[in-house]
Image 1 (tube, rainbow, N blue to C red):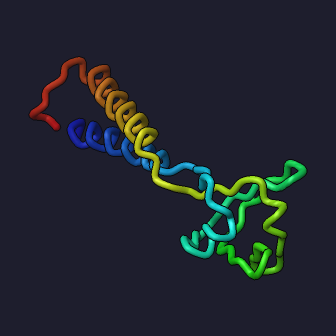
Image 2 (image 1 turned 90 degrees about the vertical axis):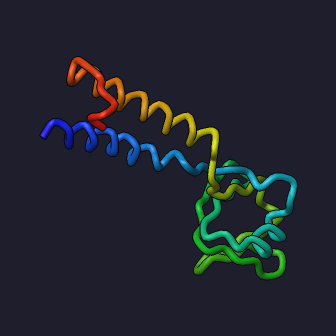
Length: 118
């Protein structure tokens, strides 16, 4: 029974760290309109003049406006555009800490560590 608990704890730590695999990243020097036309992202985060921040689903470009169902905003008012992308450094950090935490928990739980039990 303990053997299965140890595996379950380790899998739980790995599962919790899957959320670290992506983060919001700036699109860089590309214009927001051109980026949305070419990449067609599912979701974007837009920073507007005046300090407003908005997350939009399925954005499209119509002329000089960014359009989502029910809302349109001029592309000239967009200061920065971010998309959610895979982040390797963050993933390695979190998965590594999760594995180390799981192994530490196993050591504390059993009092001994035996690789053949995994």
